[in-house]
Length: 341
Ligand code: NCD
Image 1 (tube, rainbow, N blue to C red):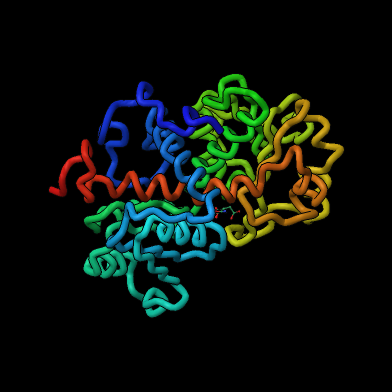
Image 2: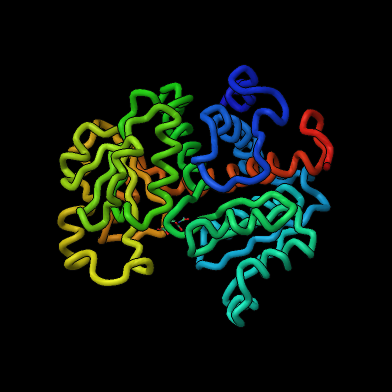
């Protein structure tokens, strides 16, 4: 990467705090296109740092970040923890299974407790849509949504955009915005916060988004958000530049949504033969966790020249560092970002 690529492009967004005038990161829906680009550009410096042997910055030294995860997570929790630590913050993980939540404490009481401990940023994952917004209303520090029910997962969409931008640049395409790209997202769209945040983010960056799922796993009225809806995976793949696969979120399903995993794989699984129906050199993405042999075959997931799944994980740390850095600038009194009120 050249130096100019890792520098924020100052001309495409306002200066200082106006570049990102939000205290919290609750969803892509709250963001303007230039705010998304700002976070992506900010992340480039952390991509560079994370590729060094010494991966440390003192930007957030002395700050306390609490990761409050009320739902299971491997990569998102680890990624936020590594991000906070690489920025020099003190990072504490709260697992709901071992917390007073299991003793019946309400979400609001948990929020008040976290606030009293004077966290400087709180990262929340919760099974209920809107829970992170509820907590944000009760605390004095920035809140970052790490996934709330079926609603949004903004840092996942941002890291996906960053991974895609890098992959496109490596192929000699500008990668700066996604105008002209067709991206097919296939899987359990109904229960997926990843699909919702990606639809908003990819469209804001100029892409055409196709959503594909069996009728029972497609939210009704999603066309109103600008998506092209498909139930036939082959048709959804035709000429697509990027294919993003999603897992069946069985933990959110009450009742039977699909006849069997085998039949689902037959109709909606990404096999090498199916991928051939997408555009030439189409890229393959998956937010994880993957169910190999169900929504995606191993040979496709591991295709060196097509799959950017591990790159998505790499970019996750950088984008979370960017979000934690940017959201704490006001409190840290960074020049141009104002003092604490
Ligand atoms: C996603 C999530 O939790 O919404 N995973 C992730 O954050 N990497 C998608 C999923 O669980 O299927």
